Image (cartoon, rainbow, N blue to C red; front, side, top):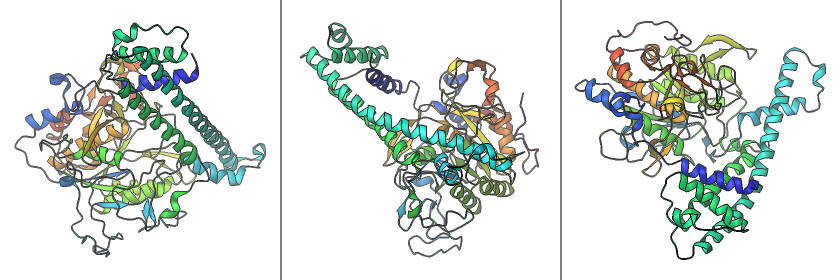
Length: 553
């Protein structure tokens, strides 16, 4: 079978496997009573929190932007009561004009950043200007280390860009082949409907296009899904191909293109990581899908008979746009953290990450400031199916020295979250999730998560990006119903009360089997019910030991 034929079949197989096979609210369910490894949200409200009072908690969402007018989010958006909307004045003197629901750090007077490069590309461009014509064998010390980094990032960026360009060219050929294959199938069926029986009765003979179509349909029928008509199949496949094409185009033209620089629309001094006051108050930006989905998981209005329920019931979402279609920049992340802390956030959700860091020192300073002000940071571990104990992943909770090397000291107010599937047994961890016995703290639901998206709509999405806000939501419940708990206590409770499992599972990205407990520090799955039970026994405002790397039994 040709490579193009295999691409079509893989696209169809991927399309069919995306259908959710669990309840839309599975992440709220309880394993014992409902049979799903959710976080027991509904059970907790019904049995443990009923009749209790709570304080409103602000959760900052550093992300791509949020649809602040969404029917399930409008009532839970944070409002800066010290700012007068639309008067063009910084009424509260916090350095940001008309910041009613938060701030956009990747926008300016000239518009908003949409696409951006990956950090690897930016590092490559910077080092290429220094080492492109240098003989690395003559270098020593810091210069040699930097040169080696250049060699590594050069290979990564150039190979990825070439691969994306090749994929884009092949995809256009695939699109034509898809059309021909379904033309042949339509002709062979005549007036007969698209059913398994009718397709099985077709003999392709020497017709290659018809053979491809029959192979595709065989795989689709094996999934047990209702395929509808050929016209519907064409439409779905066209959508899949278009999406794949957009991905390749973005990789080639933006993500891995060293000559692409969208930063000019902001008008800031990018060389100054400590500059303040840049940006605008466009909370949604060009594409708020990701940030809106994340926000719904945390706090979509509960029990309003609309759409879906968020995890926490007394939360206000502060939106901080700092994540483009590409890698976030350390300057913007640091400033977003500082803004959240200074404007009353108790928890910050960070569903983003990258393999390189431009200015980790600036981010470290912001993280330390958040710790000093008792703010909990919740971060997605990443979707590369990699071991974060050995692979680089940023931002991260380990502080760095001035020479760029790890200190061996960790932020005690930081939770790193891996993604859980709705399946039991070997498939418990999501196949894409990063993991790490030292550098991932716990796991939470992150597959087929149904939540809010822009324009009053809802959709499933998956990733550690979805698992992180589940944990942020549970943390918000604790800090709302038990307001004397510190950020560090909240972290300790979530980790120590997590549901432990020694069941053997597939290590994401490989065929290796290990006990689930080996994939994270706590060895467990976050659970609202057990966390609330433990919170009821903990006295607040108590200094706790840095639990960043404690291994729980």
